[in-house]
Image 1 (tube, helix red, strand yellow):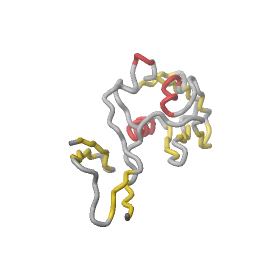
Image 2: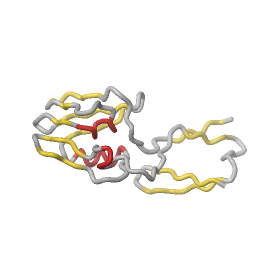
Image 3: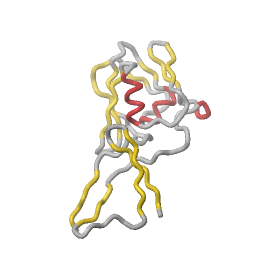
Length: 145
C-alpha cells in the first residue's frame, strides 16, 4: 500500500491511499504534474539563500521549505510580481520596487544566477534557468483508454 500526498488548489492538503493503480471500467487517471512535499529546508542559512537586497535593505526569508506560491506571496509584499512560465519551467518577475534588487543566492531557486540584479523596470524579466522550487498540482488529465 502506498501513501500519496497531493496539493489541491485552494490550500487544502489531501492524502490518497492506493493499493492498486487507479483504473475505472472506461478510463485510467493520469497525473501530468504533482507537488512533492519535501521534508528538507530549501531556504536555509546553511546555503546562505535566505537573503536578498532592495535599496540597500536586506530582506530575509524564514528558514524552512517554501513552495512557489508561498515565495510568490512573500515577494508580493516587497513589490516583486512573480509568475510561472509552465511551458519551460522558468519564472517571470516584474520589479515594482523603484530601485535595483540584488537576488543574491536566493535567486538561484527562481532560476537566476547568484547576485542577479533586477533593474527597476515595468518590463518582465524571465529567469534564464528552470525554477528549482515545486509549484503545486496544476491539473489532472483523465484519458479514455
